[in-house]
Image (cartoon, rainbow, N blue to C red; front, side, top):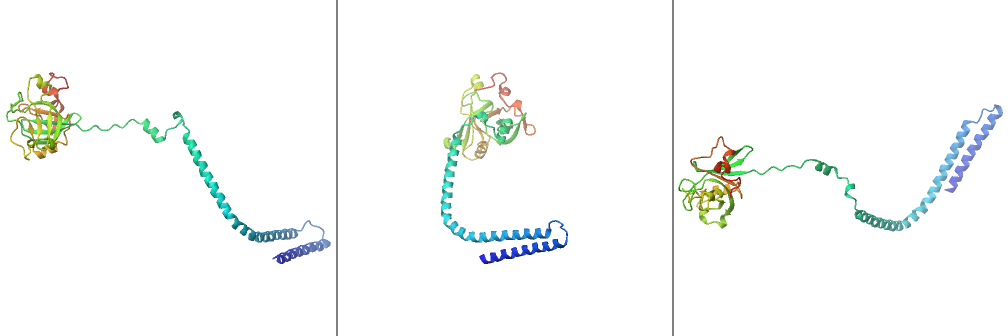
Length: 296
């Protein structure tokens, strides 16, 4: 390879000498016109070619030595990289621990956009649970489930019932009458705590309430219950009785403190197009001003 390079240098030098000799001959017969551009281009081309050839030679010589040196250096580089990576991870972990230990004052923390928007908006009001009232109409011997609307009650279900065998409002214990007035459920009894004659479920009323006690009415144990034999019986000793199937269905609308309005046969519940006006449901309708709004 060295001989080829020397030969190339010899050829280039020869071309340069010939170009210079041609220039001298032309100058001898003509007046000088400045530097010949062809000579400048030839010299520049020759120098560029010589430079490239030298670089190519040096690279071919160095590649062989570099390959062997690189092979022996790879394990050392790998060890260095591993050590550096381990040190970097350890350093980052220490930095994170140090950052976590820093407490930023709450007044300097800017809230996230979503949380800031939630804080600015008014709280969402959850819809109120639907309120139900149970009405018993002695004139039709029906129990009606009333759902409260804005300015009236809507009839959503009705069941045929059996009542006390003696007409009129209850006055004395054992008089076989069903009370009339405005009551509420104080307890719910289920099958496992009931005698069979009351069916699978019973709702205990707060008879006698404060108004009844003021009138010196006696007795107790007035329930809305089933029969234990499937269908309702013709009459009761004063309770309100439904079939076993219907008393179970009624349970979906009744809970503790559910209002129970029992209307007399002489003053039936006014239902018009499935609606009941609110003035007919409440203590004021039954007792007037005889009681405060809360009766016992």
